[in-house]
Image 1 (cartoon, rainbow, N blue to C red):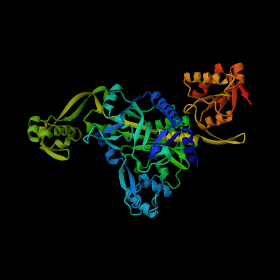
Image 2: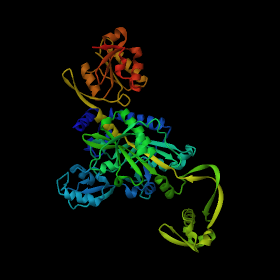
Image 3: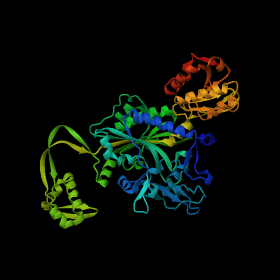
Image 4: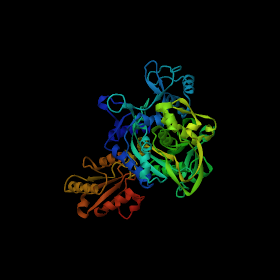
Amino acid sequence: MTSEKIVEVAKRRGFFLQSFGAYSGVSGFYTYGPTGAPLKRNVEDVWRDRFVVREGNQEIDAPTVMPEPVFEASGHLDTFDDMLIACSECEESHRADHLIEDETDLADAESLPTEEIEDLIADNGIGCPNCGADLAGVAVDDFNLMFGTNIGPGSASPGYLRPETVQGIFVEFPQLKEYARNQLPFGVAQIGRAYRNEISPRRSIIRTREFTQAELDLFIDPEEDRPDLSDLADVRLPLYSAPDQQADDGDLEEMTLAEAVEEGPVDSEWVGYYLGIAKEWYERVGVDMDRFRFRQHLAGERAHYASDCWDAEAEIDGDWIELAGFSYRSDYDLRKHGEHSGEDFTIFREYDEPKSVTRATVDPDMSTLGPEYGSAAADIAAELAALAERDPDAFEGEDVTVEVDGESYEVPVDVANFRIEERTESGEHITPHVVEPSFGVDRLVYTILHHGYREDEIDGEKRVYLELDPEVAPTTVAVFPLMDREGMGEYATELEADLRSVGFATAYDDSGAIGRRYRRQDEVGTPFCVTVDHRTLEDDTVTVRERDSTEQRRIPVDELTDALEELRDTDRSFEDFSSYELVE
């Protein structure tokens, strides 16, 4: 399997390795090595270029530890669970839905209720992967995935490592909207670490406990803001819709973005907009489009906040893994944080012209409420105001009932001072809706390595190479002296320093036969190798070798930087440089 080869190459060539090996390792944690760290950083930079810079969005960097009230508001304390089953024999814990997916043809078992999961485990005779004990009859429990901690000494201020970067965007919305001059739409992005206490991490960096997300939250006025789809209308999207997943003969359907939005199955123009951008971006960074699709979430697996959601998925050794999620989150997040914090999570939308409106209002008599209800009086007054806005009919009797912190209070309507007023308003406060594309960086790094893995034969010898795009490859160009004598070593050292000084990621290697040096660079995906030889000392030309074809051409040193920049930064290929002398 290619995955086994990728893991072997990754460890040997410094892409990634399991962390804490000196202490027997800890499952779910990985360290990026000298080649993996720049590859990951380049992927992040290319994402930032497309989704932040080109889209004109803001970027922030929020803390990774957040206080408990943030997650009370977001719903993570109640709903951020996976299904855990613990073997009664060896006490090893497993993720129950994954056991079913591994042992049956059923996909996306995550969407099923726990009772059905328990029945499937029993009906299929599924045993513990660790010791083989029968798991029939063992209870499946909900396990919250967040890492808990305390902020400051003692336990008075509980907090959690963030399970997603996006909450750092939502909680700062009252200030972020000021930076955006209270004008919708505006987007806020963040690239950073997130943490989930996975029950059973697996498949190297595909499922880990600490990982990197690149998330964008676009805040929109749902009644007025529409995306411009004109440049993306003809982008062809490979779509695996929910109805197709549930049909006996359902299959992937390819359609243009315009067709997908106008005819279905993509309900939101904004979600469609980001699917179009993402399709082109994934191809840009090296994902094989023949092994790529967008899959719509089934009703049972959608997050609690999402009215519709699509995942970008890539095929890895016959399995499909999630690379990104594209959700229409409506106003859920801002509304919840507004309710829990008491802060203003709205934006004022000005009307084209002032208009006369009828409003139900209250002006509670606090001189009565205070003595009668004590510390609850202010909250009762606030709830009276909210009730008047959402249900004026509740004030038709002599008394009105409101609920505060689970307790009901009966207030005379004349004390509430309820009335209907006509006023002229220049605008209204609205809670923006949120469209969110959320990308997993680590899984994408793995996919790029997997989809770029190649084996061929050169001069009767097996060659392994990674077909990485120059834009994301850890090293753009390696410089070799043919031999380290007669001045070739000094020339190559100076040339490598010159290339590095103008922004190229470079490597220098003078160890061993030139063929072996080529193979080492091929295996880490270096697109170009430059060799300084005897002729270089005579005419200041060097041999430039292209990784995939192994073709070589002589290029003058004073033209080398421009040529390499074109190869790295544009769509020009090595074949386009046919004017340079071909080396046989």
